[in-house]
Image (tube, rainbow, N blue to C red; front, side, top):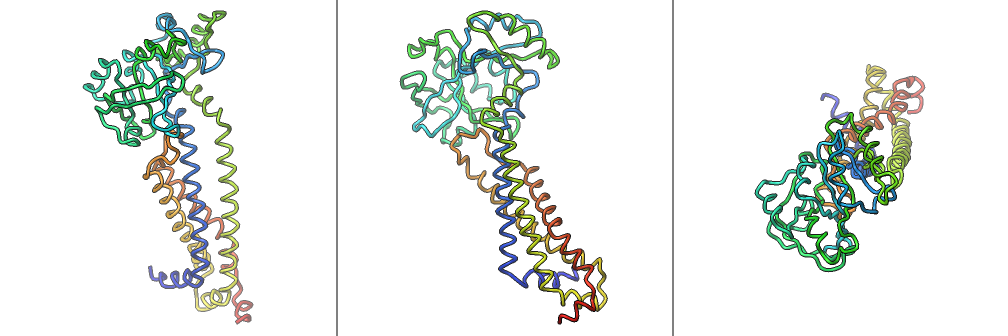
Length: 381
């Protein structure tokens, strides 16, 4: 710390320029945080997908249904441990912008299939006995201020009419990445409604749990062969592959994020490197005096490089902190992204990346300063 005063004076020499450079890092790292949040949101389903679960849907399209009668035949397939089903509801709560996924589920099998979602036993039992009962995710309940016992009105979009649900329970996720934005209710409530007569005894898709993940390929072939050449042919895949395919429908998000991030950080590298080079050029005489009174080339190298790294550290912390602050304020996408958070490992990774950019940008100016010839430099005084 004996050189702290010297270090502080160097940073405050051009306060406005130092502040702008720190601001550049802060903006870049804020963008890094937002891109990370979006990337995690689009890949959340892939990461959370169970290795031992399959999705069975209509071969034509995901929006085409399958007969409820398939459930017994699927459950008898060797290699399958259990099966459940779900159907998309697509209702509107108060406003069309209040999007959240709503599923009509098989109450008797759904909870066992998704053990990563935690629902208190008493709440689930109440839900199971209530024809108009519903379960909401903790994130969804927090978003709208719901609590157990509330009456939730939803206007049908696919299934016409005003639907009323009793919020009997709230589920939480076992991990921070688990989707807690879903809304579940009884399939029987939907299927027995006059508004659903066009889809009577049809379901959206089936989810099956395998005895072993190694059975996936064999089970997929058996199930699809079972319903081949029928009016309702199936297409089966692992839950992870299904989630990845669903995310790709939104475009190559990974490539887009990488491209934007690459351009931003390359620009930041050039700007910071140029700033440090100008700073070294302006302090040529000062650096020469330091070398003349006994400071080594190595000290000058570390001294100049430390300035660049320090600026990057402060800017990186500010930018990441701002990105994290946005996630604490709730989901600004109003449910379009099922997950909106910035994990600690990504925050640390962003700060380390900023430090790397700072070190890389400052290395050449620092090297030039360390190789400075005292005699030639002093002639400029």
